[in-house]
Length: 284
Image (tube, rainbow, N blue to C red):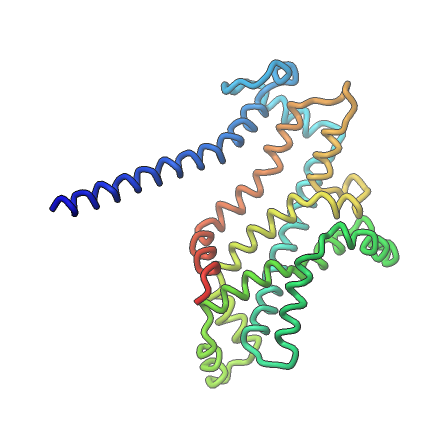
């Protein structure tokens, strides 16, 4: 009896410690969002006095100054949504298709192609930037979204995650059964494989959308016209303004404005994250 009681107390203590740790982690994650929102409600003069946990009353004033300033914020939002949405959709779809081809078919050099795709993961974007810019200039695609969307379709990290998820959740017997029933390859992929891959696709769409949304390096090299720039570029311009025009309240307001679409996408797809990450991270 004492042994069972001691085990019960030990399990309760471990559960209590786990809850305390989780609460601390949640607090550490959300605290900085709270600081951001509080600073977005303060004026430039109030921000120079240091941090205060109490929100001020200048949020709508900061937003009004932001939208009626010199930067085309709304067009930047539109551009960011277009680039991030198309990148997320096309990248996850074709990465799933590539993973399906490696998973479901046996062909020559299959292992070599898989290894080559993983090797591409090790190449930093900055290394290929010069050649990429020369190619874009040669094709006269500057101030165009195509160079930002089309190359992003080839996403080795997304492919690898989806491939690992397939190995755990997509039995080859199911594909063979569909073929026996007369299902074509594209019909099998779109009607059977994609629904089974929905959790992993949702997770990767979130990651890809956020990565594309926050991308500053490549768009800054390609987009030069103000009406074509994305929000990270406009935010960098706002922060680099000269001292007389620099308004930190507007900067915080723009950061809040720029993260709202990301929060919306996360809330829509968040119910797939836990199941998708857990299933994709464990190989069956």
